[in-house]
Image 1 (cartoon, helix red, strand yellow):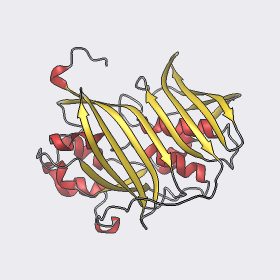
Image 2: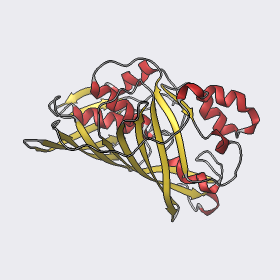
Image 3: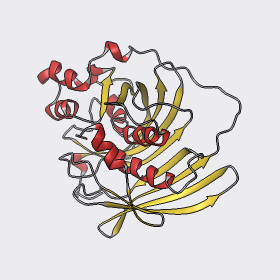
Image 4: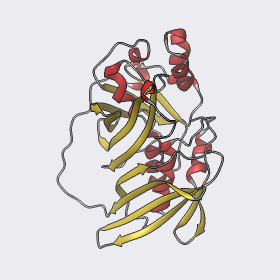
Length: 293
């Protein structure tokens, strides 16, 4: 996911084509398919542009159908399912090269007062005590596999500071938990919709990788074919995506060449602002009969 924050913002600023139809371009990453978080963020932007701006999204549920082609535009068609007194529902289908590649439902809710509770944020070192991803990759050198080192070392619009870096340095099985601090690499506009879209983009960055921790592997392992299959995201409270957020991830189960992971996203002062769940393909390469899934 190479590029600057300006490139990410340009990518999320969709062009209107017609009523409830929008077009997005891809950040050029050098990867053969579009990053799933980009499609999530763009679809959320498309849906949000058809809803009253005072009614923010509280949840989205999405399926990745085909890998997107980063060299061509992606069109997002929004269906207005319902506009109620408190809630609005939208369905978004992303099309490219004449076929659907992604589908998402999103719900929007007027802000209301109500009861409050949340789980406590995990106790981990603060981001200031950790190396950023490129520094980590440079310092670790050959102790980290080449593909993982290249991923951590590349320029991205999202700054990452992983906590449990030891997992990248060996194939030792570990508890299926992982924590990473993240934020946009530079200041974002004050529009809350931009911060939600950037968080949606970032929520797909490392979550699936948590499913391979107890097996001593990563999604960059040459013995694993990986791909996000679906993604769910809930927004709980206001936040800024250009301030440090802790992504606490865990994987309760994996089976049938699929892994399930869930994550909680906290502000640095401990407020739970979003929750995420995802299932993904983690198929051993040795069992692949054909390249397609």
